[in-house]
Length: 291
Image (cartoon, rainbow, N blue to C red; front, side):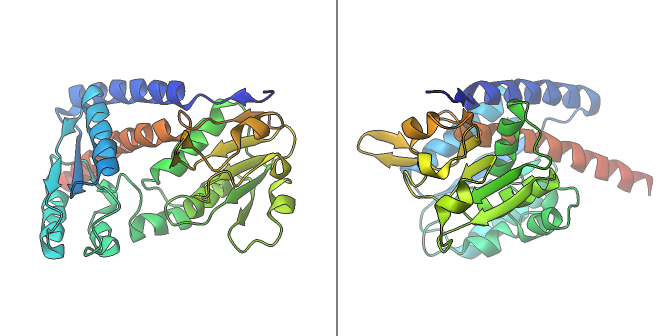
């Protein structure tokens, strides 16, 4: 292995420590404890693990755990009413609707009920619009965590060629926009890209977010490139990503592992977004009281 490892577990720990300090400072200054409201529908084992980890780490940073667990057969209007309730509760700084939902529920309309100032997942239509227009707002957690990981290398994105393999609304799309904000030259590749090897191998920074196990091999990677593996897949041999780690490690300059790369950063960024949301809401209330 010649690539340097980007240790997402260590970097996420540092981010959480910073968030904990910010929570303490905010509480002492305003008397407000930031609160994270997670909504879990049903009994999906993977979702239960994800939500449990988010709640545990939120509490460890000093936030209030405002969790709601709903039955799998809950009706759409009931979920909507709960989101509306949380939206109007000043104790709630951030709202996270855990996906995927049971098939009878439409996630899009429910997510869009979350106010932009409480959208700590950065997934509402309004949040996406703010990102597209380059206006301040809460950004999606995984792409934002990827930016933090790239920054940890000390490499400036300005002027570099960045290729994002994947164009999903959750990761690929916002990832490309965040890279553009850093003045990278960005190419988005996807399932209909004709020659992925030719496109990807021009990247100084290659982000694999296609959701296809072992899609990216050494032939896709420019020597010395930064390679970020967003994919995570459960296989008989354990967790793996979109990148063939062993062979790409021999070519890349920097690389994230799976697990221990992007995953921990997603939760750390969620916590950072929550304290940011609490601060933004408090400032908005302060302005309203002076009006």
